[in-house]
Image 1: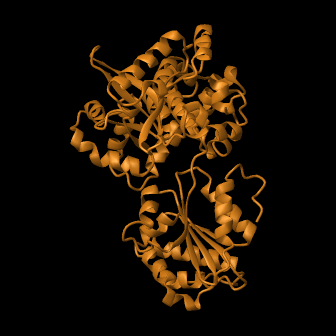
Image 2: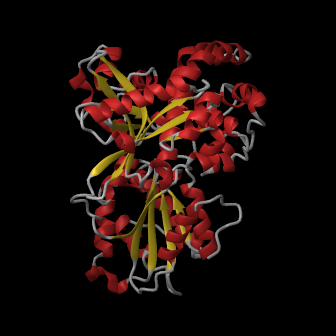
Image 3: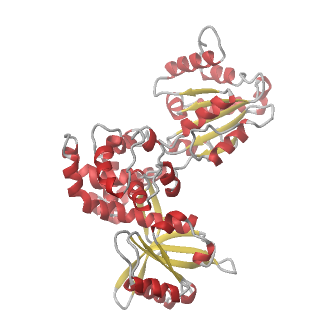
Length: 489
């Protein structure tokens, strides 16, 4: 099957889906597709169903009886039956569904599956029983795909002792577009504009098509106007999107607490203790909400590169960071038309420090992990993180924005490179000397051989001539500007 011409990228996902759809076995098979909201899962599966002549049903949040009515009507329409099927229960409905592939392997998609399972908790067990070898004799080669955005629910569907554990021949997670693909998707060729835009909308495809209807910043000079007209405009969908992302999550019950936790992280409180202080709560009180937010994909928990007992929480969705740092504190003004420009002028400093700076650091870590060549680091990276290096003599700690780890000849983990990222600051010899000092500290405590650690200088504003000359003389120094960040090695 050819991928639809209007589908951007998703080559890996399309290939896996078509492989699953084309499996020649005579039995019914199961696949599970998940991913955060707005990533194009429905678009992808609808394209597959259309290309293959398959069946697709999108569930709604309703009662079991109403869901069965909707499903019966959709299945009858697909099979050109004169009247809707009236199923007494899901046993009967699933049995009928698994008999539709009379002419060979046929795709059957149930989108928003968590809605059905919420109304009918036994549904996963019913599907499991229908896929048992003893029940297959009356079935046809249906390729059943269950899809959902509730990450915690979808993750549990095939784990542990779940009924469908071991039943799936496909377990596909549809990710957000990485920052380079996102720039291409938004038709942004200027790297600076690409970083600015990605810091707000990330790599979520729906924000380009459905939410802005193709309205993208034309360049750096248009970025501020674009934020005002497309993001801070109360008449546009992006304005309330961050709020809706939380409202749509079934796992979030005390939404006020989750809003507060995300606000604390967006304000720069990355450690659990800092989040607790911000909220005026005990650190132990936050274990559950932090776990839930991580489980649904809204935050990430990252271990410190150099301190085993330290870690950081970061918001995974750029738009959510932007909302809590810039929009939420000014919500009253923003809801009134005509105030967006003034709010944006006041919020520039916050945007640079709380949103753009940390986001640029994250992009530099992503580049180091997935786009830099092995020659850049002197080895293949196995993990990239950030961390703090103690300086006992100065009684302080030095933040390292990028720490690249790989493996040595004995397959033991080794530090390959450390880096500093400055979005709006021209980097010079002072930045290089700071990295050299940190490298010496790491060598002194036996972390690694100092001469083998590369020093990475990332800048969105460029480098001084002195630093360029120093990098030319020292093969362990790498300068990474915006063009290199987006253009490869």
